[in-house]
Each structure stands twice: as C-alpha cells, then as structure tokens.
Image (cartoon, rainbow, N blue to C red; front, side, top):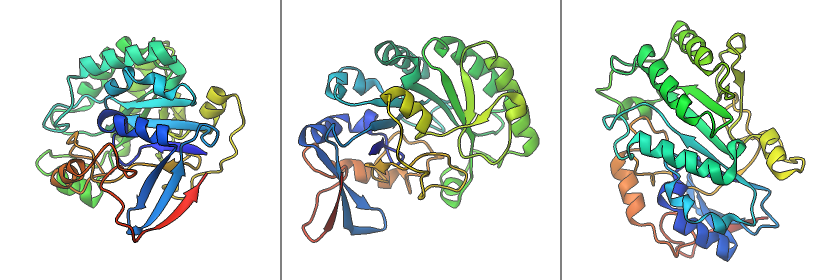
Amino acid sequence: MIVSASRRTDIPAFYFDWFCRRLEEGYADVINPFNRKQVSRISLKPEAVDCIVFWTKDPAPMLGRLAALKDYHYYVQVSLTPYGREVETNLRPKGDIVKTMQELSQHLGRERVVWRYDPILLNETYNIEHHLNWFAENLAALSASVERCVISFIDLYAKAKKNTQGLNLHELSLEEIQALAKGLARIAQGSGVTLQTCSEAVDLEEYGIIHGACIDGPLIERITGRPVKAGKAKSQRPLCNCVESFDIGQYDTCIHGCRYCYANASMEKAQQGFAIHTHEATLLGGKLVGDEKITFHE
C-alpha cells in the first residue's frame, strides 16, 4: 500500500507530531469528504506500507523527527514557488525553505527530495521573465539537492477564481506555456535536474520536459527495490499519471494561506479546521462521533 501525506493538506508543516503518533499507533482514520459517516481506517504498520509520499511547502518540522520514519520507505515533494505574501500568506522566507530542502537532501539523498514548481501563474508582477530569473537563481541553489523538478500551470477553477480575486491572473495561453517551457528547459540544461509536468495535456517533449507523476511508480520501485503492484489512480484527473494510493489528509486544514489552493474553500474554513485538530485524535481534523461506518485498509 502507498500512503499519500497529503494532497489535501500540509502534514509535514502542520501535523507532523500527529502523523508520528499515528505511526506509533499503527493507523490513521480518514473521513470521506462527501460523507462524514464513511471512514477509512488506513493501516500505517511498516509491513503494510510500501512507501509514503509526502507533500509540503515547508518540511522543517520533519528534520528533527526523521528517526520516526526509520522503518518506512518514503520521499518528500516540496513546493517552492516565487510568490510573495500577497499570494502565499504564511510561508517562511523562501531562502530559508531552500536551506531546509538542502539539509533534508543531505539526510535522504537527491532522489528522495522532489522540487515542485507548482502552480505557475502569471500576472503583471509574476511575468515570464520573473519566473525564469527566479527559477535560475533557485535551481543553482538546489541542483545538488534534487534530481527532478515538477512543473504545472494554474487551473483557475471556480474556487481558485474566487480566492484569487484582485491578483489579475489568467489562464495561460499555449504561447505562454511554450515560452516558459523553453526558458525553464534552457536554464535546467546541464544542471542534472530533470523537468517533468504534472497532469498537463500540453506536450513539451520538444523542450526535454516529459509527463511525470507525483505518486511515481518507477521512483517508488527505485526507492523500495520492489515492483509496484498498484495500478493507475482511478480517483484522479484523467491526465494524472499517478499510481493508486491512500490519502490520509483532510481538506480545509492547511493554513499556509496560498490563495490559489484547491484544498481549502477559504482561509477562514482552513483556520477552523486547524483549530479543531488535536494530536491525540485518530482523524487529522476533529474526532470520531461514534456513528461512523469504518472500513479497514491494510
């Protein structure tokens, strides 16, 4: 079984103490986002977990607790983008996060720290030139610490449109995507860092950018030394190349304050979700009431 921690919230940044306690107790409960009475109990016993895939914007809380993961295979995806506090409200300075990524890579190795340059958005401030200059500066700092950088371009769903009002964002045109891809690929050439896309229909292989996956079967096989038995993820978007996993996160609980985020209805909802979290609960947010139907997954 592959565990995703998590597409829905930032477990390493905000809930790593809870996660370590869940490892100790051997399971985590996850509420169906559409029906709170349906609960999945995900085994976190080492013999049941083939690999854990972490998603985070700030892995700093992990650094002092890596011993808790000694019985597990895992890798860490870190989203690092050029936006200021008007877009990403509550993040530490990006230079400090780069240093954390470098330190994490020293412990884990380049193959187990993945840089996500995601999402790429454009407006008057964050134009193509700004992206390319910022990417070049940070690639120079991270090329010894990561093997791949995964890019994607913002999708302005209804929730994202609402939460990004005032930022003057727009859906990227094919010409803008190609200009970014060409520039990013030119900068990455010779760095030892491979560029991949995430859930993108556009073909950028002429620039050396391949379609990738976040829950990446070949990478998991490389890390674990065992074949991945999981098939293609059925619950994700059609263009997603991820293999099947169990996500233990919960929507409306991440308080980074990224205005483009699809996982929060609003910052207010996220703060409410964060406020009801306790380290002792089996759920990431709130507690079981007692009327739930629990399905076991091992």
